[in-house]
Image 1 (cartoon, rainbow over the protein chains, first blue to last red):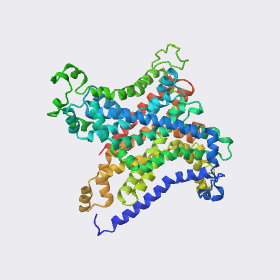
Image 2 (cartoon, rainbow over the protein chains, first blue to last red):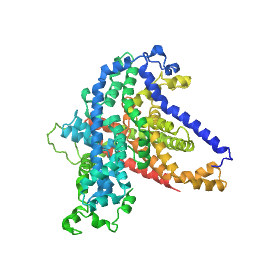
Image 3 (cartoon, one colour):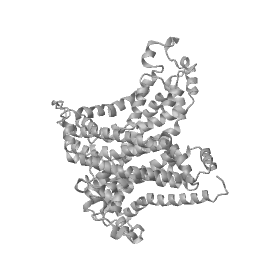
Image 4 (cartoon, each protein chain N blue to C red):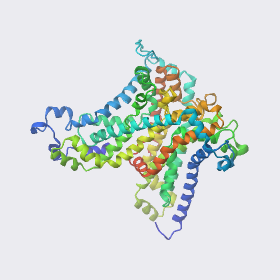
Length: 283
Length: 321
């Protein structure tokens, strides 16, 4: 960059102005969500965007808790998400290691299928999976049925594979010469090396089941089995009418749903950003 | 990715012998020939391979099978014949005006969403690449909608866009009546706008990564040759980010074609007079609510074919010179 010209400087100011305006548009709905969740009376006017102390309350959180049992829904979301993250890390590390470093019959096929699956959206599997799991195996309203289609996140498998590829193969070869078996190599050499990848994969996997609406919505009819996203959505569609400040209660539920993912993302934002840009795979 | 594999994992000298776990020191036992050089790989990848087969491959096959048969829900355990009906389900689907309308709605969505996504993600990524300060904050701002549940952000949009909402308060007399999400004309564009906002952060980061890989020397060479900023951008930057452009368009189309949660929640089911029904909404309605999985599967297969055609066309468009 030449310092003589004033143009790069002007360009930077222009870029910054554009970015700040953009950030405002992107963040305002979140700000508004929290304001709406705290309002005693719904105020959709312009001045309602300012938190007037006289119009603030926590009652909306109590109200939504009475309607959908926040604790139970959070527990369901936690079980759904937790099991998926654990399964993904355990089986994903095994598969990623095998795909990256081992020669075995069918490796090329498996990898090709995994890549191809990135283009198959879940919605297309919805009806056959519903027929299989709910109709044939009777897994409706169960954690197993909810978790099964999400159990191993393929994006995480690809992240692990990518990490293992970056490890110098000589390390594994040396261990093999020393007579270590594949499981020993995996446990003592490979897993400690990919610890950063485990955090990244866990974060990417987390937002899938935590935010998922469609599948748990299809297979849970009992409210006691519904994750928070489904419970809030159902409350939005049907149950909100009879409440004192229905919009406030809905936004309170939304806030509870949004906070864990947003906080995790802000704390670990570097990991998210790097993963997505390096793998180019949509989570 | 796959190219990288074959390069780094070719039968390099000195590797074969070391990696041979076969007993007795023979280099190519029959077992090894059947299972590969590291049979442990089969064991390690077996759980994942089984998962992929059970949750993806088999259901896809079942879906295609159902679309050619007269299948319906029965009580669990009851085995009734499901005769082959050829293209009957497809004929029924294609002659159904509601299905045709849903495909039109998705087309309408894509026409608005894809260009908006492409232009704004490239614009904001370029701007983000220009600035030095506040990058962390800005990246978080743009990415937060992407990591937040649709259910949570949709409720705020409903709050903002309903008839007395803050958007209409700002617009005053310009506000559409009926309001955005209950208007036949504005329902689909509103959904397209919401999805653009929700996904943009992901695409911005994709473009940002591509922009950071553009060699600085190219820009300097262009500047030396007396090219204006815009000329340099057109001649250097745009060609360099073309693979990212293709990917962004591809992913935006796939996401858009499979729209369900957003119209379902934003416009309460199928929207005003069914103005925002989508193929996946009909998949849900026909296949699960009304118990006609054969019809739903036929819609699904048609949707995949449609997406393949559109993505193929878009690749021709974004990759041409």
